[in-house]
Image (cartoon, rainbow, N blue to C red):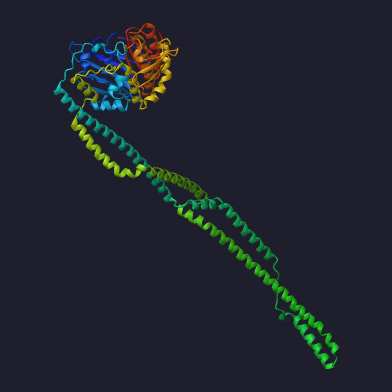
Length: 583
């Protein structure tokens, strides 16, 4: 959180009304008005005594306010009319004005706690605010001479009842905030699930237009890619068969005549038979040998018939083989192209090229489908996803009930304010500087407060702070004190020559410097983490000039991590502050 401006009207010690523009870093406000600290804190940390501290007594409403940047960097204004309530406004960049957000005090406290990282008001004022009587030598002087405390029993009873009811109400508000956060988380998770389901459904709708599996897409893409090559191969095979058929037809011989019709066959048979008969009649067997010659002519006629007939049969078989091969080529091509033609028909496309483009798109759809399914499964793995449907109605019902309780209760005062009133009614002083704590325990109390703000162990914070504390001690005390060791009841300090002593045994001027070193070292560590404005109310005005100048430089160093607003009676050394204001 960072303060950007300070607004005031009719405030004691401050003339009329005014507006101080603040900035990040070290802001020095040169003013002798002790009310300035209350002007800064009254809107952020209301106190019942603010009206008494700030009203100028001349009539009219006393108003104070601060401009601030939330943790997210959004500009707001927090206004307060003393005797009344606070109002939170947010800057509208379009209309270039501040629009009201809420006047509910608990909502404002919740905003400061959640959006700005503010701790409880008493925790903030006791650590980040340095009072004018902060130094040990000045602490407790305003309370000197106080009489015995007076207890207002009736007011104490009423404030105790109010405190109990307010704490209960704050518990309801905290629960309402947690329920709202949980509803937001579950709503976001439900939205993610719905988006993932919608993405899967949308891709599945695209897949239905071409319902092919990944394996089918791969096979069809391969077929479509080689469709032209397959057609060329088929045409080449058919052309080769046609060429072979043509050559066979060109080489075809005249058809063979039956040997029974061949005159050489019958002539040879008759001539041979005649010679055999003549040899038989003449009883000359050797004449029959000459009959073999005509028989040879008949045999030649038969053999020539067989040769021609066999050639005809081979030509016919070859022609039949060519027909079968042609049919087989066509059948094989048609069988291979059948899935492709079926896909073209299903997709209502005319060419394999168009189908290939469609398959590529379908493959992209398939990949997107796989990615969408994977995303859906990833969302479903969230352990809270199974509780969304059952938990959201219950939380919505609980939220409605809590909101009704909040509206019906109507509390507006923060717990810290009631506790301050209660302590006053009981006659218990509430100095922010911790004067009620034994002097020796103050250093440890400061470290404990810092550890609580950082949510770390006291020893861990001390180990982190010690190097810077030693540097501050050596610089502020001129090496009269160079280191410190935190103990349960006191702070043990060491000098450069090895001597040691307790914090409470130091003379007041030196104790002031040791206290200042410890305070600044803790502010540097905690302020750098919490990023909350540090308000210094002329806490070091009682120190010597060189020490004040050195502390101003130390505050300048702290301001590199968080904003520091320092009221002082005199201007700081030139070049020390990032901004110097006067009131």
